[in-house]
Length: 135
Image 1 (cartoon, helix red, strand yellow):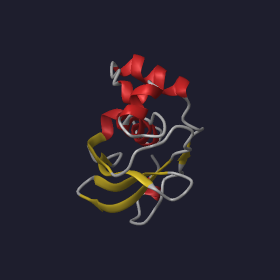
Image 2 (spheres, helix red, strand yellow; image 1 turned 120 degrees about the vertical axis):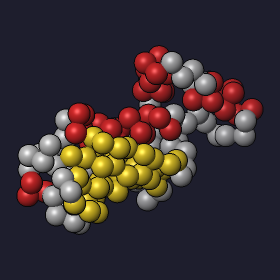
Image 3 (spheres, one colour; image 1 turned 180 degrees about the vertical axis):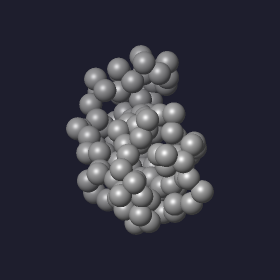
């Protein structure tokens, strides 16, 4: 992490992801152990009132983690918290973003978001990371 990036208001380079596919959902289910049928079974999604399956919320959280660890080593992440605000439909193209909101006492605080092409925010959160050279 460059300390030049540690100004309040600095945005990390966004992480634009390919469309969520059924294969992505199946692979995530296998890797995470979350086999909730609402995410992989079209009939189950229909019976629950949805037009199609949709992505695991934890998949979006994992993508945000990927954005952070592309910037700082995992050991430097002090906290990482999110709240889910909308579902991520199949074929959506999520983009992960992070903006520095505070820098103090050797820590940088970031606002996080996962947003779809239509502007829908599906996940909002915060992270606190250690600033290099301060620990």
